Length: 358
Image (tube, rainbow, N blue to C red):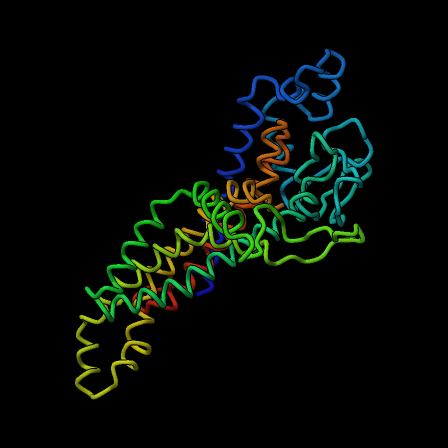
């Protein structure tokens, strides 16, 4: 078991190294001049030179990449006296504990440093720490909705196969899979927050917190979560319904189910205790994959509903050429997905005895 987990962590580390390399190439090497792109029409030679020096763009590409890895690594080496060096241990940027130190350098244990925003000069880590919990809440509520409702409807479709209920569920499943997230967001906002606003009380725009009408502060406004979560949950719901139905039907045809019936066990007990657990394996796998899709689809849904999460941060960062924010967002989400995939593999092995921890 321990060896299996360590092997998965090793694979996750290699995946993250690949992601970091790709992100660095896309946003640091491929753009012809990030400093000029950031400045736009306001650019002048002196300002661009200052920005390049601040961003480390005047260094060779290999040194830039090593500096980026050094900033991201929890254990890193830094210079302690040369403040003009890009490897300087600036206490304004790093929260660290010195492990080994000398007169001019130190090996430190620190929180990964995602650089600073070009526009606001804030630490990217602080920006993402504010935005990610809202996106995580949105994704978790969406997937929880898809799991609970999807498994329930999928089991009913398997039990009442070829009935009107099964056919109606199949129709809406195909419709749910076919709807892109951005189109579903616009459609749901128009129907439930515009046409039926008097009955639903929902708003087309709003985040987790809203400003009090009298300007006295902010308050938690959970009703703004309903439409974005419903929009994101529609597609995984449709997938969970179809997977649960086909998997339950396949398990119900197995020999051990017929043996359980021959022993006189009730149909409900057979379905819940014996069939459903073994039928959940493909559902668990699909959910882990769909969580990545939810985080990607949240970019469009959050922007449409003005949900102040990672989606809005990424779109604003791209619009303003604020590359550290976009790079940090991609790495932030990648780490979360790697961790989720590791836990998914462990859960999959627990659900299916045929999977060996090796």
